[in-house]
Image (cartoon, rainbow, N blue to C red; front, side, top):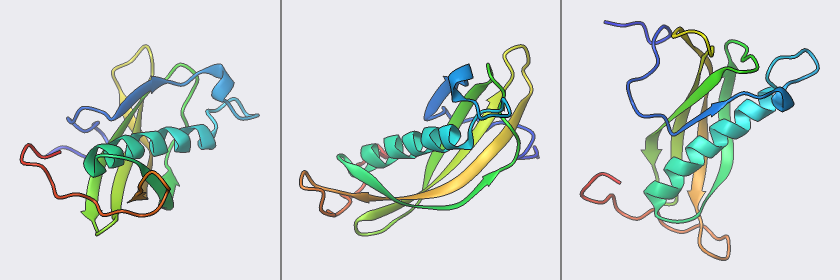
Length: 135
């Protein structure tokens, strides 16, 4: 059995991006806010697809920064639905880094995001039933 901390998930990432110099904090590390926004985008992709429409972030629980991200690192974000309520979805997001010149990966951040499906006026709406193909 493999160690979850040692190997990236086998799933296809929701987002994969490169950390750039403009994304650094005063210490030269990638700014936590940038990483959190990437996680929100990954969770938002999953929420919009599952709700088949607009969805808004309403909460972020227990964000944990485990390790820094450096300029040039490839950042892969994995998002999966934990629970679905009438209008809401709780989505777990993990961020993993890989240095450009290496195959070594490390989990750098994890959090749980809550999204609410919304209509065109921004009001909560029901999350539709799951489709047969799993969407």
